[in-house]
Image (cartoon, rainbow over all chains, first blue to last red):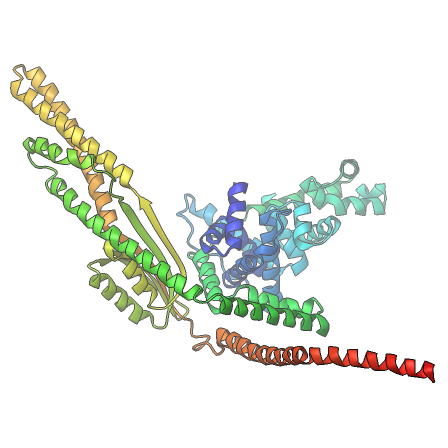
Length: 181
Length: 416
């Protein structure tokens, strides 16, 4: 897998768009979800994710193999998304897409969707610094040191920002937390 | 409230660490400290469970689907980028200039270096006459000949091939004649090369509609057809893919015609040699047909029903195999006869109307101006050198005369 990816990267460096498209397909799910949670809506998410891949392609020759390619991509995508967020702030959260598979249990499905919507909105309400670490940690499942690398901040800062972000989420989602737990 | 007996600051420290505690991101000592605090602090225990519930809620949020055509959109943007900036290294290099903090000295040095390089290249070109252009065109001619030769051979082969293939399901009695026909062909000195030719061309054209119509015309003029076409309109720049199937003999010509429709951005020519497979499959078909003929004679002679059934089954199996192999042969023949050319056509984005700056023209102008000056300078240098050469004997004579004069003067002084 890693060997194949390295080869794809090398081929992309020479301008091979087929190879790069494969890389895009391999990473688009993570990157798109990241930009979606950071920007809060699909339109900006798509813009940011596209920007990220375009920037990545242009900067590919400067990519050092010492870091994981995915971490490097995350970094570019985070920056692209934050650029957008800072440029057009305060976008009201948009509903999640409705094209879900047919639910087995409609009531539970409705509840689950409502929870998803609430969490998405709450994440969107966090200050950008906290939102970023919460998204990277709890929605993307990255490790602290990876996040530190992506955001170029010390691990201790990741820890404290995450703690504050989660505290804020806890308050925003109090009713759900007590209802579930 | 009563749980805060362990001291306010210690409680705060533990509380702040709860988030990292959930992730197991604390050092062993820190974790032990938090655990110790938790046993004696109900408030922190409640806090921890609430924090855990929150994190669980967030983690359970479903991932969203990447919108359809996302990768294609990225690709489209990249293609557009590479189309508007043909030299991808150029803008980056230009951006790097101010950042690197170049002084006028280094800039001047680089500029003169570049000029010298241009000069050297041109000098080399002038010294070796008829290099690039001629050699290229002759090579092209050879390639085209190759295409044509291959085509002639292919069609000759096709003539022979089609005869046995024309009626693959026909009566078995003919099979012996057929194999008799085929045997001498196996003994021919060099087997014909059978090559499946495929080409891929990415084009940027002025007008998409015109190009699409012309592609159809090109395919039909060459005796082929457009096997597949798709069309999309993204952001006002229509693009589409056309798959042309044309007789192999016209492959090179068609590729050239297609490329003539616009600016070629990518081009890939591929040839897959299937001669071996052809020969192998043909031989197997011959063997099977002989086997079938033999089986049929058995069938005529069979007396018992059981024998008849057994032979019948075998005949069916052999026939099936023959059908499969001749099918493969027909497929290969089709692929060899009809070359495939995939043309990806995109309309030139309107952003840069006709290109406001012709880079190559500028380079040519700069080079011409520079060479002119150098030529003048060389002329002057030459004049000076010639003058020096002309004057040199005089100088030598003058020096001699002066030396003699000095000596005679000195002698005169001494005498005086």
